Image (cartoon, rainbow, N blue to C red; front, side, top):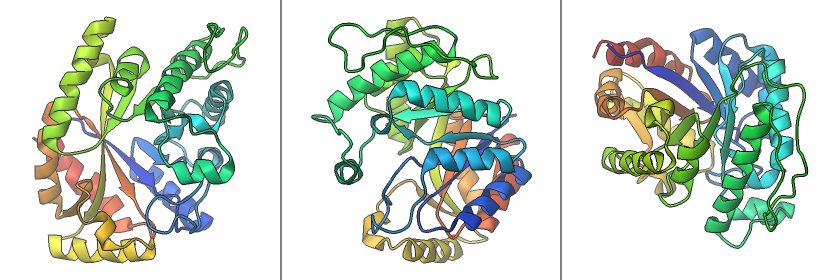
Length: 316
């Protein structure tokens, strides 16, 4: 028997706020463990200038409108905010939600939104991942009631950084998104409570082994890290009908099919087809599955993922 944990990420582009709020309430009522959204300032599918809402303020609003689902960004852009401020925001969200916050964080990747807003994008991905490692170490320390002071030459300049109030949760979870083998997965091994990754089964099998090596190197039990798989589900009675719904959603998001037809994270099919595809990932250790859902939000998929796919996985 498996107890699959399920989550929904609501794309924050191409939707009105009433649509996002209604969808969040529905996810909560259906019993999902997690509710997520992006941390982007420009849309990341299709036209970058279409409407999109900011992540942290969305989470704060959802915290007041939901009762049970946990809340986080998948994942926060470390470059957007000073990490000390991010830690303060996470702790505040934990109090607003009565202990349901997750601090999702990653190195950030979308250059146009950084350039347009005048946000430092660094010299390259490697440097941003160095910043991420430094940031997560400080955030973990202050969220746990300690303090952070930067080493000479560090990117940040913490000076006896400490926070009150502490989160409601004894250990507010940190989720790190990404699968870079040299830096990201080492940061996951050092600090993460949750890891989010996506890709083919073959790729994920390889990434798990790389993470295991980093955990061994830093003296961490890999079993302490919750593996979360990112997918984008459309569920109908047939794959053909799911494809039709998915293509309509991409049109709504101003996204040409040529941009997404080779994206292996879009899974369309019946509950049985989705469950069959998920099982080997669950056997690999991905016991939490988070489906990213574009606007217009697909109520049928919300209901069938937790109501039909999850029971098929749980029964084995």
